[in-house]
Length: 316
Image (cartoon, rainbow, N blue to C red; front, side, top):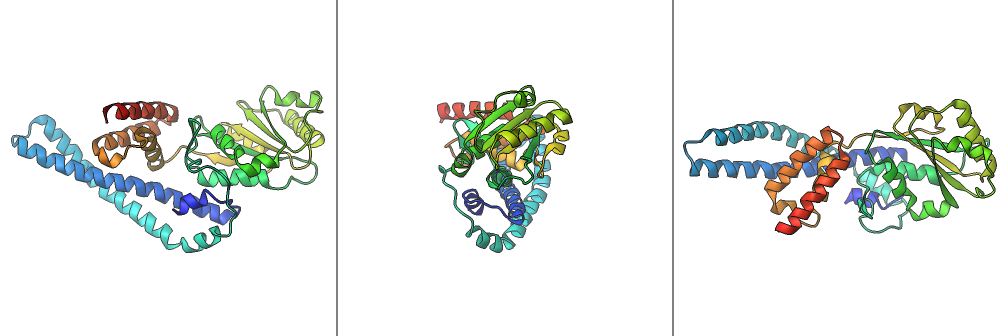
């Protein structure tokens, strides 16, 4: 409930954003722990049923039992850690909730933070707030545009994060237009007529290779001289070296944690169906999520989850 309420508010305090990240981590660990406890009960019931039906315990059944014992040795440790994480964050949550009540509300559709228009916008609670804060702050002094690099590997939702924040009502009204450039076009901006680039503009530059310092300085000068004060530049890149181009601290997007990835995968795979009613499938989905998360295959996970959801709708 606290995470959902935080997603509906504008949070500018850096300390609150750090605590929001910890709350989100504990939440996803809690969801995973709850599912894991169901898997243990399911495995125990399967063992009992198998032993009753076949006391001789064939090789295949013994292999399943051996795997189950290993899982049961592992699960209690993880469950205990998840419970301790939840207890820690809940114990220090009172001040966060009080401060959250003083933050302005956002205007948006329910669940917009998770799934919208067939695009994935999941989690990234603190990152969304940091990006939004950058866009709504006043422009840099000295005629230099404010530049924020958003850096992360492939399929970590860099573009989707930016698109989601740009849908916010305050952000849309803050800028007169949004200009999208790539590594081939940004360096030529200074050589063209800027009569159409009047007003407060958000410039999004996607870089796939490193840039020359002189070319970047020329580009920033063009932004500062042709656009109104308050225009901003956001860099999207996989290159860590682009951090040097920023005037503010970069936003670094890492691969989702296993617990968070598992929650996302099952949300997509089951849709409106309740995973509790399909514990065997839920466990399969959990194991698939681990494989996809290990390979950082978010795109493949989305496609496979969609296939599971379609099959669920047909068979159930």
